[in-house]
Structure formats: structure tokens, C-alpha cells
Amino acid sequence: MQFDLPSPGLGTSGNRGETCQRAVREALETGYRHVDTAQMYGNEAAVGAAIRESSVDRENVVVATKIHPRNLAYADAKRTARESLDRLGLEAVDLLYVHWPINAYDPPATLRAMDELRDEGITRHVAVSNFTPSLLDEARELLESPIAANQVECHPLLQREELRAYARAHEHSLVAYAPLGGAKLTHPTLESIAGKHGVPVPLVCLAWTLSLDGVVPIPKATGEHVRENWEARSLDLDDADHERIAAIEETRRLFDRAAMDWE
Image (cartoon, rainbow, N blue to C red; front, side, top):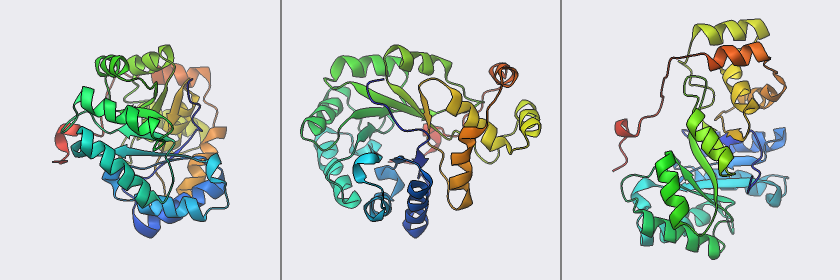
């Protein structure tokens, strides 16, 4: 891998204010060393405050944020990336993503801005989110910077075999958002495996993503779930479990860009 991301990371989508700040603090105290935010989430200030007040050395924490789809025009990307730093209260982020290649995304202009932001030290690495193989091919041709990660929804009902293979071939991480599959994700196979191990279905989903080569899950959590997700690292799924999950044919997507209002 060009950039070795700590795993698991902490996702923060949907968490704001003191709830978010407390979750990040708890995560860092627990052992997490990778925190993911985005302009879209409206919580960069809370994430930054927690990181700055933590006893964990800033250089030991990977901080990632994402440029909002409507801010992906060249000038807007350059401007709002700096605004993200101001909200975070940091001199640089470790990973800066293009969030969803839609709205103002213009590959030559947007990716030139990303290269320049890396050259200027605003970010240490460039990444993308929700990119298909064809969009990744295009981005690799246009970028001078290597792609450090592609962040996509990934869980046992959306296994992303093609994107995982692409990530391995091109030596970048696949960062898995929604790795717990969401509160409503159920499937007889997952329920059976969960019963076998005496754990909830979401922890089976997280253990599965943690076991995949080159995949870095970023489950979002607050309260006791922060530590519970961290402890999923010790849940060992056996070969039979993996074979049963690989055989699941149902596909279920939790996040659909067409259903979201980002205009």
C-alpha cells in the first residue's frame, strides 16, 4: 500500500456537536488512530476539537476529510479545503477526498486542485470516494498524486469484489463506510453466524470487513459502541463463515446518491 491506514477508523457521519466530540475523544482513548469526517457532515469543528484536546500525539492520528460535491470546482475546492483546516484547527489533514464524483465534479479541474492542495501541504495524501473502476482509471491518468484510498459503502450485502481487486492491483486502500450494514441489515446467513459466535449481526459485518485484505472499515459510533466496535478486531470468523458470507447473493445498498439532496 502507498499509505498504510490504521484500521478500524472512526466514522462520524450523522454525529455533531458534543456527541461527535465525545465519540472522537473516546475513540482515541480506546486506541483508534484514524478519524474520518467531511464538509458534508457539518462536524469538522467538533472532530478537530477532540483531536486537539486528546493526549494522543497529533502525528499518530490519521485525519481525513472530504470536499463536498458542490465544492468540487477548481476554485471552490481550493478555498473550501482551507476552510476545512480552519474548522478542524489543524495545519494539514492526512487524507483529503473527492466526495462523490457528482455535482461540480470536473475531473481535469477538480483533480488539478487536489494535486495542488497536496503540493501546498494542505493534505498529505489525495483520495476519492464512491468512484467506480472507470472513474478511478480516469483519475489515475489525470492526477500527479497517487490515489491513497477509495472510500465506498462495503458490507456483506455489498461486497465490492471488483473494487477490492482494483484497490489491491493499484495499491490503495478501500475504505469501507457503513461496514456494520446499518441497523436494519438482516440476513439469515449473518444471523446464523452471529448466533454461532454469540455476538450481534453488526459485529459479524465489521469483523468480515476487518478481515479483508486492503480494506479499512470506518464504523460510526457513539458511547459504548465505540469500544464494542474496537473489540470486533478479536472476533475471528473461520473459513466456513467466510465461505457462507461469500455465497450471499442478495445485494443491498444503504446509500444511494440519487436519493440524497446535495444541491
